[in-house]
Structures are given as structure tokens and as C-alpha cells.
Length: 220
Image 1 (tube, helix red, strand yellow):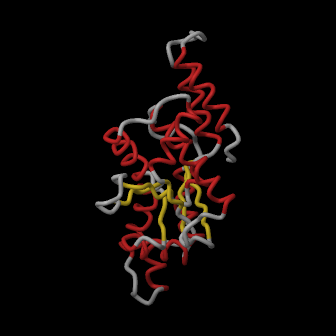
Image 2: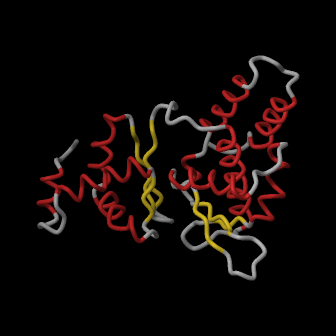
């Protein structure tokens, strides 16, 4: 670490305590992304942004590197090693589909002010089987998957009005661009190898391989 939290606290003239810096670092590691647009993470984001080099130096020994997006105002903590937490096949496929929808919205200029992209459920129901060769999970299962993705700061859900036929829509967060890259295709490839051993004739295995080809152009 270049400077201790106590030293940085003194440089803020007591506005922030060493514990404020500790909490910001902990939140960055556990939540992976701090968005300035999110009220509950705004203070932590501004601390990390203001003292970016010090936070980078503090997390580097843990194998974590930081990236920041000045335009949409967020900071991402990325592990240098690919192991990470275990991710299921359903989570991997949904993540890759949402990344593809985000990229498509970016190409069309359909991005919200803070960098979010709105994905309506009918749109997802159409894209999911095309990209994966599988039916989209039922709404209940989809909600569970989306809760996992929200913990990784990749998306959040927004309830629709009572007269809307869909119960909610998905807001894909801009940090998906930094988080979902080549390592997620490697995870999908690992699922391919783990799926019933080396049985190349398994139809599910073939579907997953087709999905990898469809989303293989996702940039790292």
C-alpha cells in the first residue's frame, strides 16, 4: 500500500475516518463494482475514485486489479486469477446472453444515461434460445439466477406496472463489459468438458457448444 488508511484519513482533514476507507475497500472486493449512480455505494465510489492509486496498491497483493470507467462513473475489482467462485451452467449461459444483448444495445445507441441497458422479458425469451439452443428458464428460476447476477453487480430487476404483461424487466449494468470476457467463455468450455465426460453425441453438449459459437465474439 502506498499510504495507510490513517494517513489518507488525515489528508481528508478528518472528513473520512480510516474505517471509511476500510469499508470502501471491503465493499469493492465483495460487491465487485461500485457505481456512483447507486445511492448506497456513492460514498464508497467517491473514496475509491479520489484515492484510486492507493486502493489499487492495497488490493494488488490480493491478486485484485482495479479498472474504472470515468464516463459512466464506476470502479470494478477484477481478480487476476480465473478460478473465482463456482458458476453453474445456467448462470453462465444467462450471463453471456445478457452480455450479447448489452453489446447489441450499445451498437444501436439504446443505453440509459448511467450506462444501463433495459432488456424486456419478451426480448430475452426470443434471444435466449437462439443464442443457447435451450429454452429460457421459467420466471421463478430466472428470478433466482438474476439474484446471483445482481450479487456480482451485473444486473438488477425493475418491477413493471400492474397493467404490464411482464412482471419485471432487467437492467444490465455497464460493468458487464469489464467483467464478462474471455474467462466466461473458458467457464462455458469447462462445462462442455464436464458434461457427461467426453460423450460428443450428447444433444445437450452439442447445444452448449453451439451457444459458445454464437457468443464467441464477445470481446474480453
